Length: 320
Ligand SMILES: NC(=O)C1=CN([C@@H]2O[C@H](COP(=O)(O)OP(=O)(O)OC[C@H]3O[C@@H](n4cnc5c(N)ncnc54)[C@H](OP(=O)(O)O)[C@@H]3O)[C@@H](O)[C@H]2O)C=CC1
Ligand SMILES: O=CC(=O)O
Image (cartoon, rainbow, N blue to C red; front, top):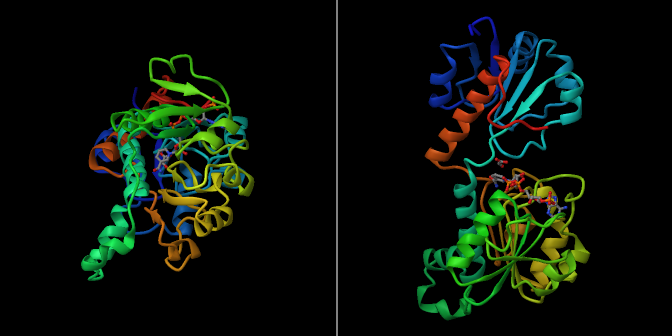
C-alpha cells in the first residue's frame, strides 16, 4: 500500500533504524536537532499528522488531540504509556501502539544491578575510593548476601519475571504479588503471596508494576512501615508508584537499609534533591532500556506499528 501521502511526525530525535524503515514508506517529519521541536513548528506538524511517533517525552491528551485533526495512530517507543490519555485517544479512534517484550532483558539487567548494589554498595564503594578513602574502607560497613534471601517482586509481568530469573541465579527465593495470580508461576519458581505477606517477609523488594490508578502512591508510609526492618528496595517501574517523602524517611531511619531507583518522582530528579543527600541510595536517570540493541528494537517496533496501523493491519503491539 502506498502511504506516501501519510504524514508521520516525531517530537524529538529518532534512531536511524526507524528513519531507514519509515522514510521510503511515509512522509516523515522528525526533529533531529538537540532538544524538542519548537512549539510553532510542532503545532504546524500536528495539523498535518496522520501518525505520531512518541518518544514518551510528551503528554498525549485531549489538548494535543484537538490540535491534530487527522491523527489516527500514536506509536509510543516504550512499554509504559502513562503519558497517554488512552480514553481520549480511543474516543477519537486513534490507535495506540507500544513496545513490550523487546526491552525486557535490558531493563531486568539494570534492576538486578541495582538489587546487587543495595546489598553490596558498589556505587558507594566507588565513591569512597574516588574520594581517597580506600584505607578507611571498613567505615563503609559490610554488605549482605543475596544468596538464601527472599526477593518480593511487585508486578510479576514480563520484566518482573525476568528480574526473578536473575535473582534465582544468585540463590534467592522469589515471592510475588500481582492483582491476579499468574498461571505459570510454578514453572517460574515463584510463589504468589498477598500484598501484606510480601511486605512482611521480603528481604528485598523489586517493583515492576505498570503505573495505573491502583499503583499510584502504592509505596506510601504505611507500606514502608509494614516492611521488614532493613529491607532493600528497588524501583524500575515509574516514580509515581512511590511516595518520595515516605521513602526518604524510611531510608533516613534505616527502616529501608538501601534503595536503588531508576525512576523517581519528580523526573528529572534535581541534583540537589534531598534523596541524593542520603548515603544509602543509588539513583540512575531512567536509563533501564538504554542499550544500543534494545533502543534499536524499540525504534523498529515503533516504526512497524505505525506502518501496520496506517495500512489497516494489526500492530505488533497495540494498547487496548
Ligand atoms: N525504567 C525503565 O526504563 C522502564 C520502566 N518500565 C516500566 O515497567 C512497567 C512494567 O513493564 P512490563 O513488565 O513490560 O509490563 P507487564 O504488563 O508485563 O507487567 C506489569 C505487571 O504489573 C502488575 N500490576 C499492575 N497493577 C498492579 C497492582 N496494583 N499491584 C500489583 N501488581 C500490579 C500486573 O499484574 P496484574 O495486572 O495481575 O496486577 C503485571 O504483572 C512498565 O509499565 C513501565 O512503567 C518498562 C520499561 C523500561
Ligand atoms: O520507561 C520506559 C518504558 O519502556 O516504559
